[in-house]
Length: 95
Image 1 (cartoon, one colour):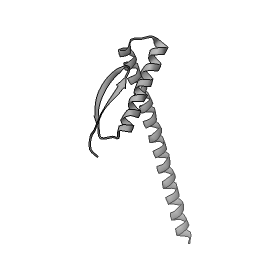
Image 2 (cartoon, one colour):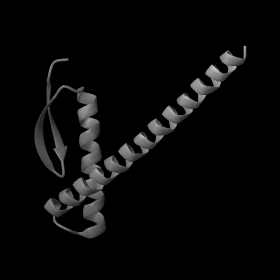
Image 3 (cartoon, helix red, strand yellow):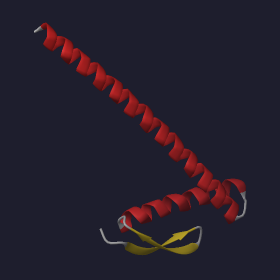
Image 4 (cartoon, one colour):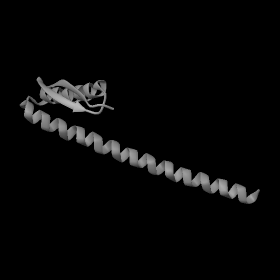
């Protein structure tokens, strides 16, 4: 896929972004970041740079928790897959 170059607005500023992702995806991510900064700005009345830092920490926390959940689900699936294989082997041995 060719690199896409677009400009997105985050916290009132325009940022040029080059990405291998689709324009729609990049805009969706930018809207998410903008929304997080705006929510923090309204809730805290802190300056935008501080809100951007807090938004980055919040998003990193969301990512870390999602990765932990993904790893948990993968481990559970692997455990269940192993259990199924053992049951199949047991069934085949009895047949």
